[in-house]
Image (tube, rainbow, N blue to C red; front, side, top):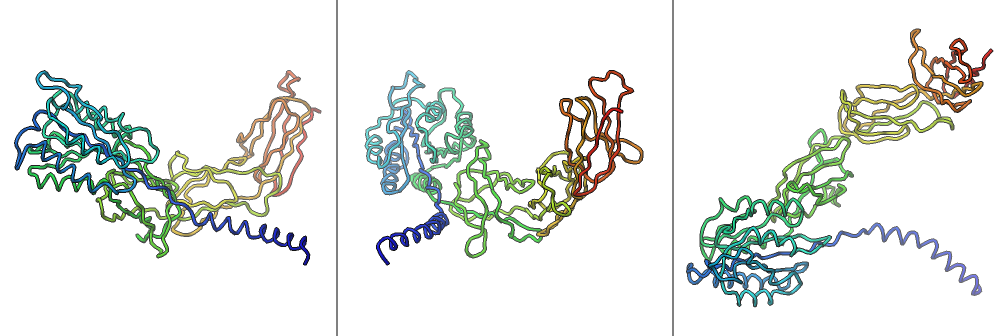
Length: 466
């Protein structure tokens, strides 16, 4: 082979292999990046933190235990920390309810800065908890893939007339932060803080240490779940349908997953945030909803959902003639007027097992009720192939097409006033067209003509004044 032939062969080989290579690259897929966890410590440095507790002052113990925790977080990936402090800037009395400040903003590897700030804090003032939580909304800068967590460490309750419960609900409702953690030092404040978030009572130094570790574990450790889409026999055989996880409290979308099986033939394992209570919508037709799903942090949760499905096939008898427009069908649950799907003829679609009513949007419309969709089987609904009526008018005018049924006329279509010819796709049967030219001002000039339609045939209907 000469150089030119070798060059051509190489080019052809590249053209042949490139689509295969591209397809294989696409098939590998790419998982979404893990979210960044952002933890804001809201730290109480009010005057009451100078009180004696266990082996030392509250502020000293809290500072030491939190600093030790920060040391353990230094090498954690996808983690950003920040520190907001209240009660440390203005002496009490007088009371200053604006005494709250973001001392260390969010950043990577800033544990040493937070530890230094903790070391230099001198408790002075009051306890504006609601205000501190409210202002924390501005501490979390915009982020498309972040989990925002607040850990409130305090030895007291709101002293400035604010409503921490209302503020917490607003933060969660807006999707700014997940349900806060509260660690109460030295006294059980559970009755006050249970509406704010998840409360941990630290009645001793040991319990404070344990509470910090539990909170961080829940905030950082991944939790897995699987959704079992159950058939009529209660087996998880259904798959390939989208599932949307909503935040039960805020209503915001948290995850979308299209269900699949893993290489062992089991429902695939999902990694979910354990700090959220979920509402799940499985987008079958019609959809199935499961509310208030609670995950146990660090444990695998199986979520069963009854989604038995079968197939509905809509077809026309014979080959569809080229003039036939696409025929759509309104699909409703039996005895319901709510539309759950619009399905075209020539298509097969999946539905939950049950009975359905169909309204086929052909001319004339057909109503077929009590269609039974059974587990893993295909129910076929077949209608006759239509024909075509070419209606020719002598001039523009007014008219309608009716179906003749037991000597009664059933309206099905109004002719267009500005046309002198129309082609209608009609189901087989007997019809009558009634027409009057717009230029003739006597009702006696009305003309009518009966005609029949057969499948896969056409008929010309001429409406001319004698």
